[in-house]
Image (cartoon, rainbow, N blue to C red; front, top):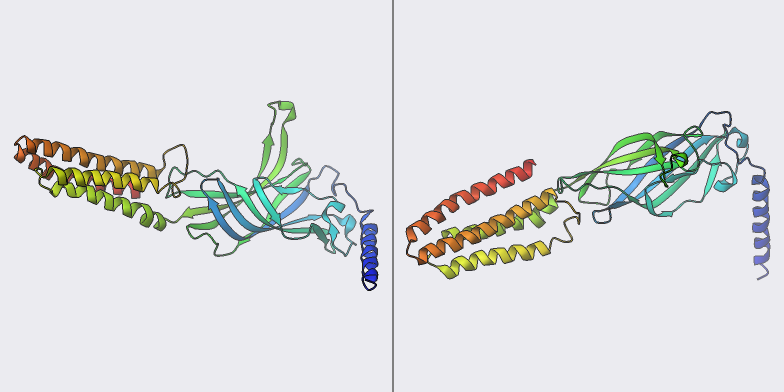
Length: 332
């Protein structure tokens, strides 16, 4: 216990020395003569872990560095707590959840450049449009906003942006699109006199979905079910049990398969490209069932020749219609 006392005293003395060195640091903006303080923003994406179709968000691991000039503290050689000096208060606007990994401190370079680096493991919101699903291309923005300052006070400028070559997500191809400077205007209470304008900087990434997963999990099984319903046109119309059995099995198999797609298809209120294909397949299977009923009815009435001719027509038309649907689906 005695050995721990000097260490505790040393820590207290160091804390007091740090507080003494930072007590007189300026907290006002460096450029107060009408010139906006230029803040250079650099970003490096270490990983994009997940894009959530249901929650409309994505999770990433990113390092963000801010640099601005404040020559008033150019002589400080130790790290300074971020809240001990003026700082542009740049935050991620579309943030939902975040964990920070680095200390909330800045370093001052000899020329007066203040540098703040932080690593975020964050979940960001993104408006995902699934109308072209599974051929959709999504934009993943990292929107930075200088809260509490107008564009006349703080100017956000993109300096450097980069990322790792490969990310954890295996069903998307992600590549950077660039940075875009803009202004955010907000009017929370529909009162023009309370309009808020803030400087904004968006780093955008383009995510292209890989189709292979959905081909093996959705398109290939649907094709097999359609071929199963197609087989009814080769069964003799007089075989009522076999005709109705194959058609009914195709419909029930397709309905059961659709229930299994809940965790694959995005839960949106509008129809996606995949939905159009699935509903078209459902219509084709149902048409095969109706044709089986009609052909067997005519066969039971003794009009077997007409029933066979009807089967022959559908035997030829069915694959042609299916190929047209597949062509439209892939060409979209």
